[in-house]
Image (cartoon, rainbow, N blue to C red; front, side, top):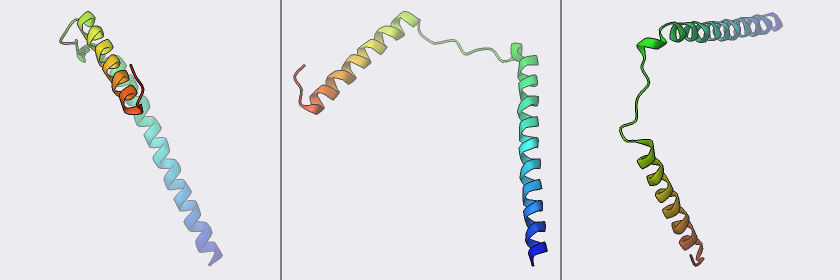
Amino acid sequence: MMTEGLRLMAVGMITVFAFLTLLVGMMKASTVFFETFADRFPEDEPDEPAARRSNRDAEVALAIAIAEAHRRGQRV
């Protein structure tokens, strides 16, 4: 009974170790792949200029701050 438990523990630990080793190996292989073929995966370019986007972000942040102040019952 004790031997079966030890055998089961050893098989489980070896299985987990093998899976994690395979996972690390696949991650390293994908890193090498994407570094090698990075020129074939172009970066997505934004649809609108950064200046327009940053102005809208500031407006959204202001609207969120006003809404939060209103929710808390504070005067703005």
